[in-house]
Length: 355
Length: 252
Image (cartoon, rainbow over all chains, first blue to last red; front, side):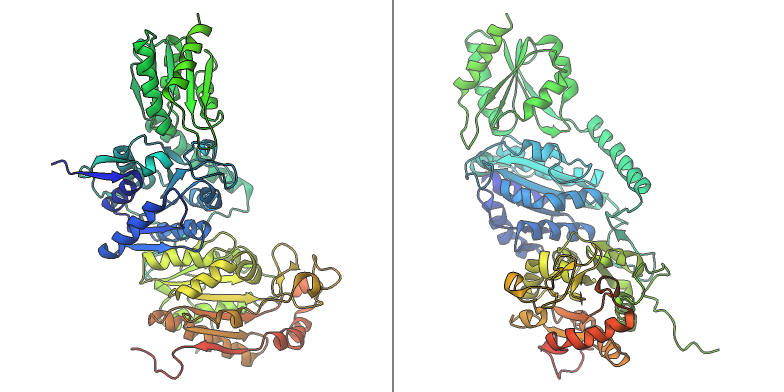
């Protein structure tokens, strides 16, 4: 039976993680993700889990590295500047094929920026963030229910592909409250046999080694190419998105996360004004739903990319549609949230430009 | 024929890459021997640093992980919290532990993490070719203190044992050396005690080993040991800096 509770997005993340067997959370205080740590600190001791407030975001991600290497489901959460500090650790996790979930409740930047919501860490999350050739699966929820559902799925994806899964959210979604059905997830952690985990040899097997140092370039290239095959598999299998009124759309708006909620209103407004607008909302921003976008490029006259950043996701939209059609940018930055009217203006502009 | 000496089972057969006269080999053996003696090798998980000992994961015959520069105590924390039955140790140099990783060192000690840290202090960055370390002595010449360490410019070297001993939580802190047979034996005792404390759940144990780096000091191995005795030991006195359980008998 559905078990609905009213929750903040941040709390939904913590609840989902616990429900799917995450018992090791390491974090460092930063706004606007604070409720995740607060929730974990309350619940973990009651269920025999670990909540540890680390001395820094750097230490926190390295604790996740240790706990994951020990074979346990582990996560950390932070907000933009803190994620920058975790970048080296995320690269190590990727290089060692360790599963982990990293939550970014984005705030505005650059620098200390501000505490208002933003989507300006798109490049950092989707294009790498840390050093070296690696990818993270990046999930982009746009409501509190999805914060819950995607967090639960993030742990399975991380274990399945032995990679880092980033939940790329923002301060709006983290702070707002919506009813959430928390009953429909289960702990699947036993599905993966982590024979690589560092649990001690017990004198019965050869030592397991978790390491990312490969001094011989031929060996490192082979390791990277092997991992690349897994990334191609993720691209083939895991791209997810949602569409709204795209069937006959001339103008396709592309937006994710909180911006997609505003964009949906803009599309509705445009339809009421007689414009054939639709919305494609990527749920995974890596892998990016590029095949579907490319197909839409044959039908649509133009695209509008609506983001709370100064033109980051638009590059992926242009790549996906191979620049076959014009792509207009509707962008706000610095913690400003777009209005439906702003995005609707861009839809109208796209319509005029493509006539 | 009776075997009077052999390599501990806690070490693999991989040939060590360390320079001739380097004391890492001795400390590796002491750590492995301690784990064997306490029957802990099968439960051990070691954390290799960034620095000369980065390849330690090839030498210890137990589960091993390589950590980002300075982060070994955080990684050890994650390992230990996830699997409290593991015997978790880090093996770190002076740059790793006392410069880039100072926060992790101090905070893991302050938390009283039930882990063991083996700290190799040879007053220099080895792997990168001999730069000034946080423990480089005043006037000591290195690649990045070519006129000798000027303490009016860089401050004085950090005494890590003394610093950590001001904290309430650590169980055991001792500084040892491996410059003589007598001191190697004392070091063996200290490292064994550190692992025993962890096994008994007593909390954070920290052994600093005052060591040499003949290659980057530009001295023969023999001369390096003399230099260590004449210069390092007066600034870094050997001894027990903290032992919360001194005098108590071992737990069964």
